[in-house]
Length: 436
Image (cartoon, rainbow, N blue to C red):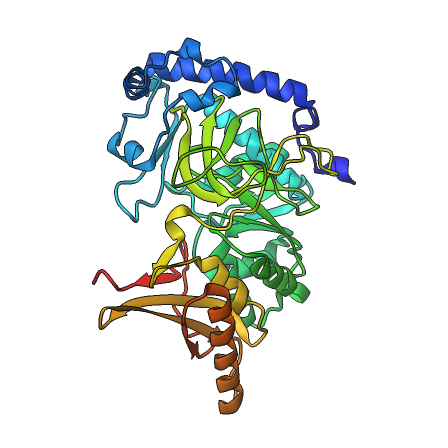
Protein backbone atom coordinates (compact mmCIF):
# COMPACT_ATOMS: atom_id res chain seq x y z
CA UNK A 1 0.00 0.00 0.00
CA UNK A 2 2.78 2.41 0.93
CA UNK A 3 4.55 2.09 -2.46
CA UNK A 4 1.39 3.37 -4.18
CA UNK A 5 1.89 6.65 -2.35
CA UNK A 6 5.16 7.42 -4.16
CA UNK A 7 5.26 9.47 -7.34
CA UNK A 8 9.00 9.23 -8.00
CA UNK A 9 10.25 6.55 -5.66
CA UNK A 10 13.95 6.65 -6.69
CA UNK A 11 14.11 10.39 -5.99
CA UNK A 12 12.04 10.20 -2.80
CA UNK A 13 14.11 7.35 -1.31
CA UNK A 14 17.63 8.20 -2.51
CA UNK A 15 20.43 7.58 -0.03
CA UNK A 16 21.48 10.32 2.35
CA UNK A 17 24.92 10.27 0.72
CA UNK A 18 23.38 10.99 -2.68
CA UNK A 19 21.08 13.67 -1.26
CA UNK A 20 23.98 15.47 0.39
CA UNK A 21 26.33 15.21 -2.62
CA UNK A 22 23.60 16.51 -4.93
CA UNK A 23 22.74 19.28 -2.45
CA UNK A 24 26.33 20.55 -2.34
CA UNK A 25 26.72 20.37 -6.13
CA UNK A 26 23.49 22.28 -6.76
CA UNK A 27 24.31 24.81 -4.03
CA UNK A 28 27.54 25.63 -5.89
CA UNK A 29 25.59 25.99 -9.13
CA UNK A 30 22.95 28.24 -7.53
CA UNK A 31 25.47 30.62 -5.99
CA UNK A 32 27.36 30.93 -9.29
CA UNK A 33 24.11 31.39 -11.24
CA UNK A 34 22.81 34.07 -8.87
CA UNK A 35 26.15 35.93 -8.79
CA UNK A 36 26.73 35.91 -12.54
CA UNK A 37 23.20 36.68 -13.67
CA UNK A 38 21.53 38.84 -11.02
CA UNK A 39 22.90 42.31 -10.18
CA UNK A 40 21.26 42.29 -6.72
CA UNK A 41 23.09 39.13 -5.64
CA UNK A 42 26.34 40.18 -7.29
CA UNK A 43 26.29 43.42 -5.29
CA UNK A 44 25.18 41.63 -2.11
CA UNK A 45 27.97 39.03 -2.26
CA UNK A 46 30.59 41.63 -3.21
CA UNK A 47 29.58 43.72 -0.18
CA UNK A 48 29.92 40.62 2.02
CA UNK A 49 33.31 39.90 0.40
CA UNK A 50 32.12 36.44 -0.63
CA UNK A 51 33.00 34.85 -3.96
CA UNK A 52 31.06 31.93 -5.47
CA UNK A 53 34.33 29.98 -5.17
CA UNK A 54 34.09 30.37 -1.37
CA UNK A 55 30.93 28.23 -1.26
CA UNK A 56 31.77 24.57 -1.79
CA UNK A 57 29.29 22.81 0.53
CA UNK A 58 26.47 23.41 2.98
CA UNK A 59 29.11 24.13 5.64
CA UNK A 60 29.87 27.38 3.79
CA UNK A 61 26.27 28.63 3.83
CA UNK A 62 26.92 30.86 6.82
CA UNK A 63 29.31 32.92 4.68
CA UNK A 64 26.36 34.08 2.58
CA UNK A 65 24.21 37.03 3.67
CA UNK A 66 20.49 36.58 4.28
CA UNK A 67 17.83 37.67 1.79
CA UNK A 68 14.74 39.34 3.27
CA UNK A 69 11.19 39.91 2.10
CA UNK A 70 11.70 43.66 2.19
CA UNK A 71 14.66 43.30 -0.19
CA UNK A 72 12.56 41.27 -2.62
CA UNK A 73 9.83 43.90 -2.49
CA UNK A 74 12.38 46.60 -3.27
CA UNK A 75 13.28 44.69 -6.47
CA UNK A 76 9.70 44.67 -7.80
CA UNK A 77 8.95 43.84 -10.54
CA UNK A 78 11.93 42.34 -12.42
CA UNK A 79 14.90 42.83 -10.10
CA UNK A 80 14.96 39.21 -8.90
CA UNK A 81 15.42 37.76 -12.39
CA UNK A 82 18.59 35.82 -13.25
CA UNK A 83 17.44 34.98 -16.78
CA UNK A 84 16.29 37.15 -19.70
CA UNK A 85 12.62 38.08 -19.39
CA UNK A 86 11.99 36.22 -22.65
CA UNK A 87 12.84 32.98 -20.80
CA UNK A 88 10.06 33.53 -18.24
CA UNK A 89 6.88 31.55 -18.92
CA UNK A 90 4.85 32.48 -15.86
CA UNK A 91 4.69 34.88 -12.92
CA UNK A 92 2.80 34.63 -9.61
CA UNK A 93 2.56 36.96 -6.63
CA UNK A 94 1.86 37.02 -2.93
CA UNK A 95 -1.29 38.80 -1.77
CA UNK A 96 0.59 42.01 -1.06
CA UNK A 97 -1.76 42.78 1.85
CA UNK A 98 1.12 44.31 3.82
CA UNK A 99 2.66 46.25 0.93
CA UNK A 100 4.22 45.56 -2.47
CA UNK A 101 3.81 41.86 -3.34
CA UNK A 102 6.77 39.51 -3.72
CA UNK A 103 6.88 37.63 -7.00
CA UNK A 104 7.63 34.16 -8.24
CA UNK A 105 9.01 33.82 -11.79
CA UNK A 106 9.25 30.51 -13.67
CA UNK A 107 11.20 29.26 -16.65
CA UNK A 108 10.05 26.12 -18.46
CA UNK A 109 12.31 24.05 -16.21
CA UNK A 110 11.02 25.82 -13.09
CA UNK A 111 7.46 24.82 -14.06
CA UNK A 112 8.63 21.22 -14.56
CA UNK A 113 10.26 21.20 -11.12
CA UNK A 114 7.11 22.67 -9.55
CA UNK A 115 4.96 19.99 -11.19
CA UNK A 116 7.38 17.30 -9.96
CA UNK A 117 7.47 18.37 -6.30
CA UNK A 118 3.71 19.00 -6.29
CA UNK A 119 3.06 15.53 -7.72
CA UNK A 120 5.31 13.95 -5.07
CA UNK A 121 3.44 15.83 -2.35
CA UNK A 122 -0.03 14.98 -3.69
CA UNK A 123 0.89 11.32 -4.15
CA UNK A 124 2.13 11.34 -0.55
CA UNK A 125 -1.31 12.67 0.41
CA UNK A 126 -2.95 9.71 -1.33
CA UNK A 127 -3.85 11.16 -4.76
CA UNK A 128 -3.95 8.56 -7.55
CA UNK A 129 -5.16 8.54 -11.13
CA UNK A 130 -8.37 6.91 -9.89
CA UNK A 131 -9.29 10.00 -7.86
CA UNK A 132 -11.57 12.92 -8.67
CA UNK A 133 -9.60 15.89 -7.34
CA UNK A 134 -11.36 19.19 -6.66
CA UNK A 135 -9.05 22.23 -6.66
CA UNK A 136 -10.63 25.10 -4.71
CA UNK A 137 -7.73 27.62 -4.46
CA UNK A 138 -7.84 30.37 -7.08
CA UNK A 139 -6.21 30.16 -10.50
CA UNK A 140 -4.95 33.73 -10.44
CA UNK A 141 -1.72 35.32 -9.27
CA UNK A 142 -1.92 33.18 -6.11
CA UNK A 143 0.16 30.03 -6.64
CA UNK A 144 -2.36 27.67 -5.04
CA UNK A 145 -4.60 26.62 -7.91
CA UNK A 146 -1.81 26.23 -10.45
CA UNK A 147 0.49 24.33 -8.08
CA UNK A 148 -2.12 21.69 -7.35
CA UNK A 149 -3.12 21.57 -11.01
CA UNK A 150 0.39 20.93 -12.28
CA UNK A 151 0.95 18.13 -9.77
CA UNK A 152 -2.43 16.46 -10.33
CA UNK A 153 -1.87 16.53 -14.10
CA UNK A 154 1.40 14.65 -13.61
CA UNK A 155 -0.39 12.00 -11.56
CA UNK A 156 -3.27 11.72 -14.00
CA UNK A 157 -6.18 12.27 -11.61
CA UNK A 158 -9.44 13.71 -12.91
CA UNK A 159 -9.34 17.41 -12.02
CA UNK A 160 -12.36 19.52 -11.07
CA UNK A 161 -10.80 23.04 -11.28
CA UNK A 162 -13.46 25.02 -9.46
CA UNK A 163 -11.15 27.74 -8.16
CA UNK A 164 -12.12 29.95 -5.25
CA UNK A 165 -15.56 30.97 -3.95
CA UNK A 166 -19.10 29.93 -4.89
CA UNK A 167 -19.25 27.54 -1.96
CA UNK A 168 -22.70 26.08 -2.62
CA UNK A 169 -21.64 25.27 -6.16
CA UNK A 170 -18.46 23.67 -4.80
CA UNK A 171 -20.53 21.29 -2.67
CA UNK A 172 -22.86 20.52 -5.57
CA UNK A 173 -19.91 19.67 -7.80
CA UNK A 174 -18.61 17.31 -5.11
CA UNK A 175 -21.94 15.49 -5.20
CA UNK A 176 -22.30 15.59 -9.00
CA UNK A 177 -18.79 14.47 -9.95
CA UNK A 178 -18.11 12.18 -7.01
CA UNK A 179 -15.13 14.16 -5.74
CA UNK A 180 -12.87 11.89 -3.67
CA UNK A 181 -10.13 14.37 -2.70
CA UNK A 182 -10.11 18.12 -2.17
CA UNK A 183 -7.46 20.79 -1.68
CA UNK A 184 -8.03 24.20 -0.12
CA UNK A 185 -6.69 27.10 1.87
CA UNK A 186 -7.13 26.03 5.50
CA UNK A 187 -9.85 28.57 6.35
CA UNK A 188 -11.83 27.68 3.22
CA UNK A 189 -12.39 24.04 4.17
CA UNK A 190 -14.09 25.43 7.29
CA UNK A 191 -16.39 27.50 5.07
CA UNK A 192 -17.12 24.50 2.84
CA UNK A 193 -18.01 22.44 5.90
CA UNK A 194 -20.53 25.03 7.06
CA UNK A 195 -21.94 25.44 3.56
CA UNK A 196 -22.51 21.71 3.20
CA UNK A 197 -24.37 21.58 6.51
CA UNK A 198 -26.46 24.63 5.52
CA UNK A 199 -27.45 22.73 2.36
CA UNK A 200 -28.46 19.69 4.38
CA UNK A 201 -25.40 17.76 3.19
CA UNK A 202 -23.45 15.74 5.75
CA UNK A 203 -19.87 15.75 4.36
CA UNK A 204 -19.00 12.43 6.00
CA UNK A 205 -22.20 10.66 4.92
CA UNK A 206 -23.26 12.27 1.66
CA UNK A 207 -19.97 12.95 -0.17
CA UNK A 208 -17.14 10.66 -1.31
CA UNK A 209 -14.43 13.07 -0.15
CA UNK A 210 -12.13 11.05 2.10
CA UNK A 211 -8.79 12.74 1.46
CA UNK A 212 -7.84 16.40 1.74
CA UNK A 213 -4.66 18.44 1.45
CA UNK A 214 -4.58 21.94 2.91
CA UNK A 215 -2.10 24.76 3.29
CA UNK A 216 -1.35 28.48 2.98
CA UNK A 217 -2.29 29.15 6.62
CA UNK A 218 -1.04 27.92 9.96
CA UNK A 219 -3.44 25.53 11.68
CA UNK A 220 -3.35 23.48 14.84
CA UNK A 221 -3.71 19.75 15.39
CA UNK A 222 -7.05 20.53 17.05
CA UNK A 223 -8.31 22.19 13.85
CA UNK A 224 -7.10 19.24 11.74
CA UNK A 225 -8.97 16.85 14.01
CA UNK A 226 -12.14 18.96 13.68
CA UNK A 227 -11.98 18.86 9.86
CA UNK A 228 -11.11 15.15 9.80
CA UNK A 229 -14.12 14.28 11.94
CA UNK A 230 -16.59 16.42 9.99
CA UNK A 231 -15.63 14.82 6.66
CA UNK A 232 -14.38 11.41 7.80
CA UNK A 233 -11.29 12.53 5.93
CA UNK A 234 -7.57 11.79 6.04
CA UNK A 235 -6.11 15.30 6.40
CA UNK A 236 -2.72 16.25 4.95
CA UNK A 237 -0.60 19.37 5.31
CA UNK A 238 1.17 20.85 2.26
CA UNK A 239 3.81 23.57 2.53
CA UNK A 240 5.22 26.11 0.13
CA UNK A 241 5.17 29.77 -0.79
CA UNK A 242 5.41 31.93 -3.89
CA UNK A 243 9.08 32.86 -3.62
CA UNK A 244 10.14 29.18 -3.72
CA UNK A 245 7.54 27.91 -6.20
CA UNK A 246 4.20 27.48 -4.43
CA UNK A 247 2.55 24.42 -2.85
CA UNK A 248 4.68 21.29 -3.01
CA UNK A 249 7.87 22.25 -1.17
CA UNK A 250 7.06 19.84 1.68
CA UNK A 251 4.21 17.55 2.78
CA UNK A 252 3.37 15.05 5.49
CA UNK A 253 3.17 11.33 4.76
CA UNK A 254 0.49 8.91 5.98
CA UNK A 255 2.22 8.75 9.38
CA UNK A 256 1.45 12.47 9.93
CA UNK A 257 4.71 13.08 11.75
CA UNK A 258 6.32 16.14 10.19
CA UNK A 259 6.67 17.47 6.64
CA UNK A 260 9.09 15.83 4.20
CA UNK A 261 11.08 18.58 2.44
CA UNK A 262 12.28 17.83 -1.11
CA UNK A 263 15.99 18.31 -0.50
CA UNK A 264 16.97 17.82 -4.14
CA UNK A 265 15.34 21.20 -4.85
CA UNK A 266 15.34 23.16 -1.57
CA UNK A 267 17.89 23.65 1.20
CA UNK A 268 16.64 24.68 4.64
CA UNK A 269 18.25 26.10 7.77
CA UNK A 270 16.75 27.11 11.12
CA UNK A 271 17.99 30.27 12.82
CA UNK A 272 17.25 32.29 15.92
CA UNK A 273 14.99 35.06 14.51
CA UNK A 274 16.57 37.65 16.81
CA UNK A 275 20.27 36.87 16.37
CA UNK A 276 20.33 35.14 12.99
CA UNK A 277 22.50 32.39 14.48
CA UNK A 278 21.81 28.71 13.66
CA UNK A 279 19.89 26.76 16.31
CA UNK A 280 20.46 23.15 17.33
CA UNK A 281 18.64 20.03 16.07
CA UNK A 282 14.91 20.05 16.86
CA UNK A 283 15.11 23.59 18.26
CA UNK A 284 12.42 25.94 16.96
CA UNK A 285 13.39 28.97 14.98
CA UNK A 286 12.87 30.82 11.72
CA UNK A 287 13.13 28.79 8.51
CA UNK A 288 15.67 30.00 5.95
CA UNK A 289 15.57 28.62 2.39
CA UNK A 290 18.02 28.43 -0.47
CA UNK A 291 16.76 27.18 -3.83
CA UNK A 292 18.89 24.53 -5.55
CA UNK A 293 17.36 24.26 -9.03
CA UNK A 294 15.52 27.56 -9.52
CA UNK A 295 16.52 29.26 -12.76
CA UNK A 296 14.34 32.36 -13.11
CA UNK A 297 14.76 33.85 -9.62
CA UNK A 298 17.15 31.93 -7.35
CA UNK A 299 17.08 32.63 -3.63
CA UNK A 300 20.03 32.58 -1.25
CA UNK A 301 19.30 32.18 2.46
CA UNK A 302 15.79 33.62 2.28
CA UNK A 303 14.26 34.38 5.68
CA UNK A 304 10.66 33.27 5.15
CA UNK A 305 9.48 34.17 8.72
CA UNK A 306 7.83 30.77 9.32
CA UNK A 307 8.58 29.15 12.68
CA UNK A 308 9.43 25.44 12.80
CA UNK A 309 12.31 23.01 13.40
CA UNK A 310 14.15 20.19 11.62
CA UNK A 311 13.77 16.62 12.86
CA UNK A 312 17.08 15.17 14.01
CA UNK A 313 16.21 11.75 12.53
CA UNK A 314 16.45 11.48 8.74
CA UNK A 315 14.70 8.11 8.36
CA UNK A 316 10.92 7.67 8.31
CA UNK A 317 8.84 4.51 8.35
CA UNK A 318 7.14 5.65 5.14
CA UNK A 319 10.43 4.93 3.35
CA UNK A 320 11.33 8.50 2.39
CA UNK A 321 14.80 9.73 3.18
CA UNK A 322 14.32 13.49 2.83
CA UNK A 323 14.45 15.42 6.10
CA UNK A 324 11.30 16.43 7.93
CA UNK A 325 10.21 19.81 9.18
CA UNK A 326 7.96 20.20 12.18
CA UNK A 327 4.47 21.50 11.36
CA UNK A 328 4.44 25.27 10.96
CA UNK A 329 3.25 26.77 14.25
CA UNK A 330 3.27 30.43 13.31
CA UNK A 331 5.23 33.21 11.69
CA UNK A 332 7.73 35.58 13.24
CA UNK A 333 5.32 38.43 12.47
CA UNK A 334 2.27 36.51 13.79
CA UNK A 335 3.44 36.94 17.36
CA UNK A 336 1.62 39.80 19.12
CA UNK A 337 2.96 41.65 22.14
CA UNK A 338 0.18 42.34 24.65
CA UNK A 339 1.27 44.14 27.81
CA UNK A 340 4.79 42.88 27.14
CA UNK A 341 3.69 39.24 26.80
CA UNK A 342 4.19 37.28 23.56
CA UNK A 343 0.86 35.91 22.30
CA UNK A 344 0.65 33.39 19.44
CA UNK A 345 -2.73 33.01 17.69
CA UNK A 346 -2.08 29.26 17.40
CA UNK A 347 -2.09 29.00 21.20
CA UNK A 348 -5.51 30.67 21.32
CA UNK A 349 -6.87 28.34 18.64
CA UNK A 350 -5.60 25.26 20.48
CA UNK A 351 -7.49 26.27 23.64
CA UNK A 352 -10.75 27.10 21.83
CA UNK A 353 -10.94 23.88 19.84
CA UNK A 354 -10.76 21.72 22.93
CA UNK A 355 -14.40 22.71 23.51
CA UNK A 356 -17.13 21.01 21.48
CA UNK A 357 -19.49 23.89 22.24
CA UNK A 358 -17.42 26.11 19.94
CA UNK A 359 -17.13 26.19 16.16
CA UNK A 360 -13.78 26.75 14.37
CA UNK A 361 -14.21 30.51 13.78
CA UNK A 362 -12.76 33.10 16.16
CA UNK A 363 -11.22 36.56 16.30
CA UNK A 364 -8.55 38.10 18.52
CA UNK A 365 -9.12 41.82 19.11
CA UNK A 366 -6.49 44.03 20.77
CA UNK A 367 -6.85 47.67 21.74
CA UNK A 368 -5.45 50.20 24.19
CA UNK A 369 -7.48 51.66 27.04
CA UNK A 370 -6.07 54.34 29.35
CA UNK A 371 -2.57 53.44 28.20
CA UNK A 372 -2.98 49.72 28.89
CA UNK A 373 -3.22 46.89 26.36
CA UNK A 374 -6.48 44.93 26.34
CA UNK A 375 -7.25 41.69 24.52
CA UNK A 376 -10.55 40.01 23.73
CA UNK A 377 -11.18 36.66 22.07
CA UNK A 378 -14.49 36.40 20.24
CA UNK A 379 -15.32 32.69 20.01
CA UNK A 380 -18.23 31.54 17.89
CA UNK A 381 -20.61 28.98 19.36
CA UNK A 382 -21.31 25.78 17.43
CA UNK A 383 -24.88 25.87 18.73
CA UNK A 384 -26.92 28.04 21.06
CA UNK A 385 -26.38 27.71 24.80
CA UNK A 386 -28.59 28.63 27.71
CA UNK A 387 -27.54 31.60 29.83
CA UNK A 388 -25.93 29.65 32.67
CA UNK A 389 -24.15 27.28 30.26
CA UNK A 390 -22.78 30.17 28.23
CA UNK A 391 -21.53 31.99 31.31
CA UNK A 392 -19.84 28.86 32.65
CA UNK A 393 -18.12 28.28 29.29
CA UNK A 394 -17.01 31.91 29.07
CA UNK A 395 -15.47 31.78 32.56
CA UNK A 396 -13.73 28.50 31.76
CA UNK A 397 -12.27 29.90 28.54
CA UNK A 398 -11.00 33.03 30.26
CA UNK A 399 -9.29 30.89 32.88
CA UNK A 400 -7.69 28.51 30.34
CA UNK A 401 -6.53 31.33 28.09
CA UNK A 402 -5.03 33.21 31.04
CA UNK A 403 -3.19 30.05 32.10
CA UNK A 404 -1.92 29.40 28.57
CA UNK A 405 -1.05 32.96 27.50
CA UNK A 406 0.01 34.33 30.90
CA UNK A 407 -2.02 37.48 30.36
CA UNK A 408 -5.62 38.49 31.03
CA UNK A 409 -8.11 37.83 28.23
CA UNK A 410 -11.75 38.81 27.89
CA UNK A 411 -13.93 36.24 26.14
CA UNK A 412 -17.05 37.02 24.16
CA UNK A 413 -19.26 34.21 22.88
CA UNK A 414 -20.72 34.99 19.46
CA UNK A 415 -23.88 33.48 18.01
CA UNK A 416 -23.44 30.58 15.56
CA UNK A 417 -22.44 31.70 12.03
CA UNK A 418 -22.16 35.36 13.08
CA UNK A 419 -18.45 36.04 12.47
CA UNK A 420 -17.23 37.09 8.99
CA UNK A 421 -16.43 34.29 6.54
CA UNK A 422 -13.78 34.15 3.81
CA UNK A 423 -14.94 32.91 0.43
CA UNK A 424 -11.61 33.84 -1.15
CA UNK A 425 -8.22 34.34 0.51
CA UNK A 426 -6.96 33.81 4.02
CA UNK A 427 -8.93 34.34 7.22
CA UNK A 428 -8.21 37.48 9.25
CA UNK A 429 -8.01 36.23 12.82
CA UNK A 430 -6.24 39.15 14.52
CA UNK A 431 -7.60 42.71 14.66
CA UNK A 432 -5.09 45.04 16.29
CA UNK A 433 -6.66 48.46 16.93
CA UNK A 434 -3.76 49.94 18.87
CA UNK A 435 -2.44 51.85 15.87
CA UNK A 436 -5.82 53.44 15.09
